[in-house]
Length: 294
Image (tube, rainbow, N blue to C red):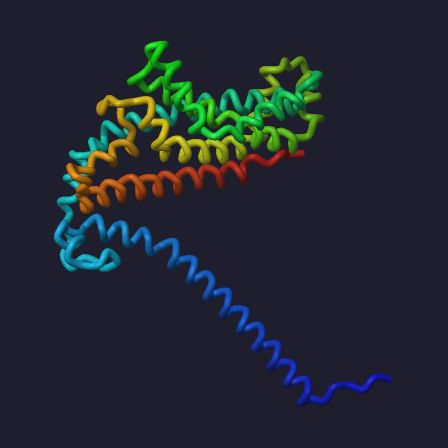
């Protein structure tokens, strides 16, 4: 027969267990607090810097908060950076590029993952290989091609380039989503007389709409925040995107208007945060309404 532990031993073990659980809880809360500080402090610093005067940037440390709020930086930023025009150009380029990327990428992923034909594995491998090609490597040849075709200084070179950059990743991600869809659903659609396009639009896309939202959000922010392509293929101020418009705050001899610059960045960053919250809500709705009913 085993010998039971004494009440004193059980109390000591209980205190040790409670102390360990308290220490783990304290450590978890400390890590969460640290993550919140790392995430929130840069946003607060950006917002406070957008309300500083130019003298405050020179006479005081950058990490200090302003004693007097200067809201005129926002009006200066709005007019200097041409934010309405630049945001319109960015949205035209981004929405057009993302729409074509999702349409072509989803269709290619459906064909390579659902349809059965010889060589589809090699084609998928070739498309995914496009992820390994640096964008900087193809900018000069593309610029020469666009110049000879007369497409320079327009929005078309940016849209075409973004589509080419986004398709490999989109095909790869959407193929994994189509892989999780039961093949019996596509077979039932084919038995009912549905063709390839009907099975794709009526069965495939509704079942992977969560993936479409996720990839679309990824592509949207990737294209909207790009500077290199927008700066390479366009030199007309009237066609500048918002990222290129932020360069208008650089003056002569390297001088920078920090107050209006931070104000313009705040408008872009917090606008994207609001848009992200809206898109995130739509994604959660898609997750709850996209279940397969038996």
